[in-house]
Amino acid sequence: MEFQDYYELTQLYTEYALAIDSGNWDDWPEFFIDECIYRLQPRENYERGFPLATLAFESKAMLKDRVYGVRETLFHDPYYQRHVVSAPAVRKWQKDRIESEANYAVFRTKLSEPSIVYNVGRYIDVVVRTSEGLKFASRECIYDTEMIPNSIIYPI
Amino acid sequence: MSDEQHIFPEELTWERTDSSRIPFMVYTDEELHKKELERLFYRDHWNYVGLEAEIPNAGDFKRTVVGERSVIMVRDDDGSINVIENVCAHRGMRFCRARHGNRPDFICPYHQWSYSRKGDLQGVPFRRGVKRDGKVQGGMPKDFKPADHNLTKLKVATRGGVVFASFDHDVESLEDYIGPKILAYFDRIFDGRELTILGYNRQRIPGNWKLMQENIKDPYHPGLLHTWFVTFGLWRADNKSEMKIDDHGRHAAMISTRGAAGKAGEVTDVSSFKDGMTLHDPRLVDIVPEDWWGGPTAVMTTIFPNVILQQQVNSVSTRHIQPRGNGEFDFVWTHFGFADDSEEMTRRRLRQANLFGPAGFVSADDGEVIEFSQEGFDSNPSHRTLVELGGREVGDTDHMVTETLIRGMYRYWRKVMEA
Ligand SMILES: [Fe+2]
Image (tube, rainbow over all chains, first blue to last red):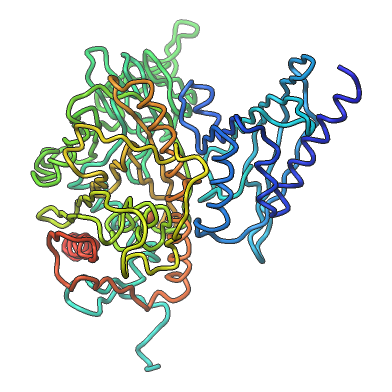
């Protein structure tokens, strides 16, 4: 893998984190190709082979439906979130396709409240090259924080 | 304010003789909470502990909870299920730390006391002392009988693959406990078909455990709070629906049949209704009716005190309520399917699971409103909530514009707690 490819990959990871922490939810689906997978799954289900995910989307269109839900239909306490993501490890690399993973931690800060460790886990990704640069074909967020502090509204 | 009125009352007082105005104090008082654990969880009641499909083989176990007491549900050699308390008979340690697994027996690591799958004490190291220089040193007293020191065993009942347990060995039969009316809705899902576990979701909700029972005894809110329900006609006030309650008032079923989507008079004249809302990917509500529904598209059953049985279109789950003091509970969702489901049906159940759980398009709001209700209660326990929709009495209805099921639960609560 060329340094340029790895640089683009780390950019993708960083831009993704910054985007979903910004509150501009419409940016989120744009990190994915149309036929994509997004899963937020407790580590228990992942390791025991149970298919259930906390959220499981199978297309960019579903991600847009989630954005609409976050913005318009889900009543929730407002909060900020902040992702801290490790440098990605590349597991497999072909010309236009990268399999990579990284650790992540998400902090949640409700208005006038202290920041808490909200969701920590591992991204397991398939990244592909498109005419618009690198995009996620698949992003699985496998989280250790199985006991969710009440709810998860915004994308991880 | 008169001298007698306190924001933090010492005595619980009800504004009326009926159960239509519920004192905030039932959600905020630690002593009442302990009394609830004694009277509503540990005595006279059955508690949900899990599904048989979670422990298919001999030695399979799941660590779970009855009230606030840790218990182990384990499959015995003969295929039966035992439920034993996770507290060592020696020094009281919660010895089982794994959440699930398979074991020939249970051993407390502290002093290696070992127990069978029935919870019988089998081994006590140095029970007869240790020999040194021809002398026996120490050991348990001569009159020590292992049989007197088994783990606490719970009474167990299974029906249709669902496992219930009770610390009270004199509790009535599970069937009498649930009662014929609600048992019919229980059997509608759990009719003997083999279940397959799809997985778990867990959330910790900072509110009193009863609020979750009330949430699923409250047909008033889904068509108001939950945009998806009202917009897609999945659950709203103009649906054909029935509320059923058992003779005691403790268990209930909310039965509804999906009606029209889109606009319809006052029912959709609410801010949560989104006229013209369509999904970018309609597969999220790709609903295919199943024969066993027998008509209704959703039946939400509350079995007191600690489980909710969910059938919302193709999504089925149990939701286990696990109190943690008066102000918090864990809520564990077990989604399942049936062994004869096609691959498409499994995929559909998993897809519709996006509506439920701690991040669900519908259910994420429920945890939020419970948290904020508790905040209101904590700040002024002298006040009370109002559940007078549809009158002040308790009984079945053929509509959902009522809070009768909540009134039923508190009529029962008062009977047991004031006895
Ligand atoms: Fe709800």
